[in-house]
Length: 335
Length: 261
Image (cartoon, rainbow over all chains, first blue to last red; front, side):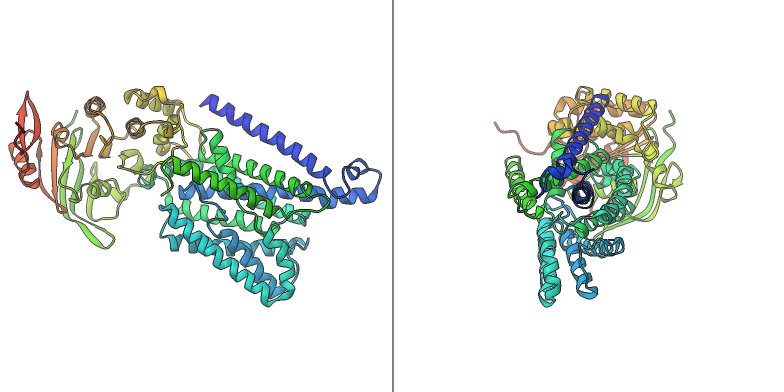
């Protein structure tokens, strides 16, 4: 109601403020330090560093995190499963396999700045992610049993990841390219990648908002949702496509980045009671903020060397998942 | 109040689950503006019957709701006509009570539309009638099982449909709130609403106007709750392990077990 709405706006504005601060820090951090930012109007090299490297990277990290946060919120709302996440459902590995196949057949560099390359890689990553989600759902025979869903997701993820590794092995030229990709990196995000991500993110956010009430009804059970006139079949198809598209788009630009999609909706829900449409919006903001923070940390922790951001999110996200499982065990456990 | 017209009429209805026929040619008439209880042993097909009458399961045969074929309605029209309260559905604990009950107004709202004053009024009335108003800002996860059931009942009432179908609505309710539920049903039928419920508690089911007795996917009896033939049919489907008797002008089901000394 009105006080809840006010809290949501306050929460969203706080996160937006943090995002703006994060972007400010993001363009200030790097091997040449803050001097590049101070000299941006005087020095061509500094201008290049800020405009061509740091700014697209920082904005790209936010957009990729927002895509993953949105994917996680949609997956959790659709599957009514608190552990549904692009990484755990196998869709991220499916997207990686799609990119690996595209590189093996057509060559090139997955971090190439050309916008057509970015769109093409996004397309194959989407197809790979979609196939992986469908395969996971078939193996799990639905979504009702968390452990079965997770197990199926892990199997699909491992098998598709192994296939991507195999392709990398038999094509040594791909191996070098894939290494950074498999670890997850925001280091090579350019403006074309940012444009692709924003172009996917915006309509996906609108569709997520559109299906918010339907997801709320589904949260009361399938029969209740059907009795309230929710077109479940259409909703499921659209939302599975959205999960695959958002995951595939993020993975195609940054590689495998784990747990942002899991943590973002959880953090939002732990802070307030919100409907699924709002969860999707706020999770996108939260996901963007998380990956932005992870990107800044990855650049700062071992400066001037850089950690792959995927490694950092995997370590932090793994700890978060363990904590979630520990907490759920104390509350009766996931079935 | 017109108690002679028919709210639901099913003819030769067959329903299969996972390739196995569960209901075998059911014929049924539910009177409009009355409360009808469906009883029968475990696995008799009571919940399947109720779901099929709601349009949640595919069926063969014919089902008329207020004289129009059930499958001739759009999903939205059906949602406005039939309110459903399911049994043991896994619900998310994240939504707050107000938002849950507001979902009952979904059949009247356009996608992404803001709730109207009428929607707000319907939600408030439903919350007040189930005494759940005080929890409206709490999350569903913060409530006990019985409190949650009352909120879900409020959600079903908020639909304000002329026909309410409820599967085990008394689950988790303590005796005083079971009595509240009875009063609620009486209040609904007084407003010319039709209520159909599946109940395990035969004693509570006997408070209804009409009774449908189901056994092994077939309707073995349909009649008024006060009719001795109905009592005999109930006793038979429960293998004469219970006896229907009148105590202080209420029909009650007593177990056929001698009292311990």
